Image 1 (tube, helix red, strand yellow):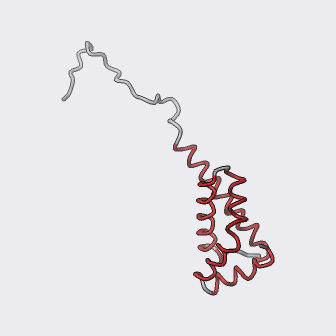
Image 2 (cartoon, one colour; image 1 turned 90 degrees about the vertical axis):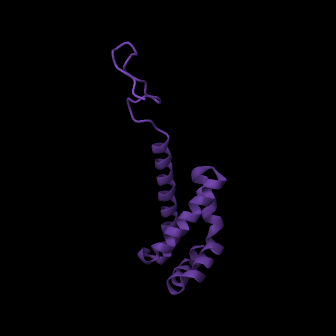
Image 3 (tube, one colour; image 1 turned 45 degrees about the horizontal axis):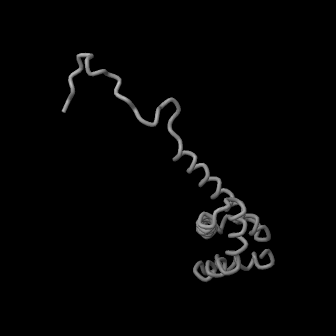
Length: 116
């Protein structure tokens, strides 16, 4: 993949659509294998590769060294994976000190009237 990295970058810069098609054709499988090694889940690996390719296409102008294109793409892939892991951790936690279900603090005989 590194042999053609420079021409992939140039293709994307010249014509985004045909460059994107070439990126997917030549890089999908190696990127999928790298994503699968990170996350261990086929569906998540496919999603990570898709999001990585989106980011690559959006930020191709920031790729400073075309010879390091593959490493640059893999760093984007790793960052996408880390963001998904962090997001999952945040979604699956309850704020510290709060029970999963909040109970009413007043007892029925405390002189507190129920509001309907």
